[in-house]
Length: 422
Image (tube, rainbow, N blue to C red; front, top):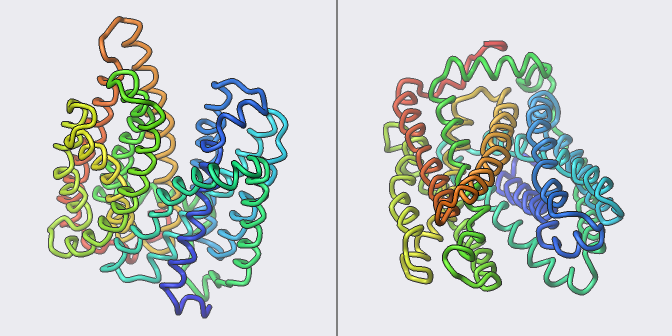
C-alpha cells in the first residue's frame, strides 16, 4: 500500500473526487429549465429529483456503505461508488421520462454515498489528530467548489453542447477515475488491519458508542442541528426577491459567487483555526465550533433586518455562507477522534444519514410548510419569519457543541480499546 506513504497526494486525489461528486450531484440545478422542458415534468417532480430521491438513497446507503468501508478495502468501496454514480450520471443523459431520470438519480446518490464515509476514515488514519481539522476542511471545500463548477459547466460547456452531452462527458470522466482507483489496493483483513464487524453488529456497536459517550452524541446532534441553516438557505433567494425587493437574476449570481468564495474560505480557515485552537481550548474541537457560532451569530441575525444592499446585509449573508463550512473540519475531526478506527466510516455514514433526513429533508419540508401556513393566515412577511427561525435553530446548535465541549474534557482520547458491540 505504497499510496499511503503520500498523504498529501491522497488528500488531493480525494478532493478531486469530492469535487466531481458535487458537480454530478448539482448538475440538475444548473440545467433545471432545460431538463423540465425536455422531460415534460412538473415542478413538483423536479423537486422530487433534486430532493426526496436523493435523501431516500444517499442517507441510508451512507450507513451501509460506511460499514463495508470499515470492513473491506476503502479504496475499492470508493472505486465502486464512483463507477456506479458515473455510469448513472451518463444514464441520466439518456433519460426520456421522469421515471427514468428518478431511477438514474437514485443510483447516482447511492454511489456517491460511498465516498465521504470511506474518505473521512482514510484521512483520519493518514493524518495526526493535530492536523485533522485542517485536512477535513480542505476535503470539504469539494462542496462549494463542486456547486460552483456545476453552474459554470452548465453555462459554458452545457450552453454549447446541451445538458445531455454534459452528463455523458461527466459520466465518462468518472468511469475513468473509478478504473484508476481499482489499482490502489488496501488490505483490511483482520490479520493485517483492525476492521469492522458485519453490518448489523457494526450498527449496534456504533449506537453503543453514542450511548456511552455523551460528548460524541452531543457533537453529532450539534452538527445535524447546524445544517438547519441550509433549510433557510433554500428559501433565501425567494425571501430576497419577494420580501426584500431585490432583482432575481442579479441576486442569484451574487449568491452563487459568494457561496463559492466564502464557503471555500470557511472550509479552509475553519479547519486551520480548528487545529490551532483545539489544542488550547478545554473542550477541543467542540469548543472551537461553539466559538465560531458565537462570533457569527450577530451578523447573521442582523442581516435579516438590514437594508438590502447595505454593508450589514452583505456581511451577514457572507457570514451565513462561511459558518456552516467553517465547522466541517472541526466537527469531523472531533467525531473521528472519539471513535475507534474500525468504526469511523460507519459513524461518518450515520452522521450523513442524520443530516440528510432530519436537517435537509425534514428541515426543508417544515420550512416550506411554515411559509404556506403563515401565508394562508395572512401573516406579513412570512418568509422573513421562516428564514429567521431557521437561523435561530441552526445557531442554537451552539448549545449542543458547548455541552459536547464540557463532556469531552472528561473523555479525552476514548477511541482506543472499544469492544465490538459496546
